[in-house]
Amino acid sequence: MTTIGMPEVRASIQLPEGIRSSAVKFSEGEYLHELVRANGFRRTLETGFGLGVSAASIMTASRARHVAIDPFQRDYDDCGLKNLERLGLTPNLEFHAEYSHSVLPRLLAQGRTFEFIFIDGDHKFDGQFVDFYFAASLIEEGGFIVLHDTWMRGTSYLVNYARANRRDLEPVPQSLRNIAVFRKRGADRRGWMHFEGFGGTPRSWIAHKVNQRLHAQPDSFLGKAALRVKDALKLSWSS
Image 1 (tube, rainbow, N blue to C red):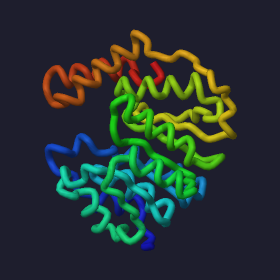
Image 2 (image 1 turned 60 degrees about the horizontal axis):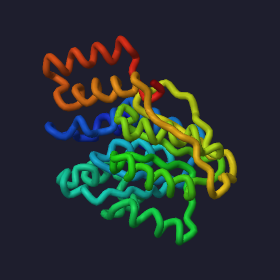
Image 3 (image 1 turned 180 degrees about the vertical axis):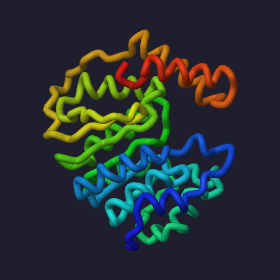
């Protein structure tokens, strides 16, 4: 593995017009990179691959094999795969062009475990919940599960679910608004009838609507106004 880092990732990754807004931000990539590097993680996985920013950030930190799952890479004209090839990272990429709900149970049945899992695939609540459920079974004690796009209400609800119901997963404070982090702290010892309610707040509803407008039309007058509201209120998943 070549000893490239985040400066090379920033310089080499190509983000085509029209789809670049869907990419993980470089500031978020740097956070993922440092989290993996600081903890010495080598067994990593992500659901959702997109333009390859997260994979490149993780792989340049771990310098090891990385599992990525995404059935829609062709819809991106294989841009993510091309970006990793440009960086010389392809030899260490284990890429599954399938749905995560097919791949994750297979990895679990094979007895594979991971130290770091990044969830950024299907953003509907039920799709993310399935990814999170299997991630919680695949992650080793002491490992991290990271959720992206917490501005989306479905993701916000998933964060609330985890906080209310998964005592084995400890929330990890961090400064980025659009990411939530959980660390595996032991076995899941809930009884078979366990359930704690979870949901959003009026503030989280406002955050969702503001971010919807911002994401749909970031350069419009309403999009810029939404950004000012978001910054003023510091809207995030923790609302």
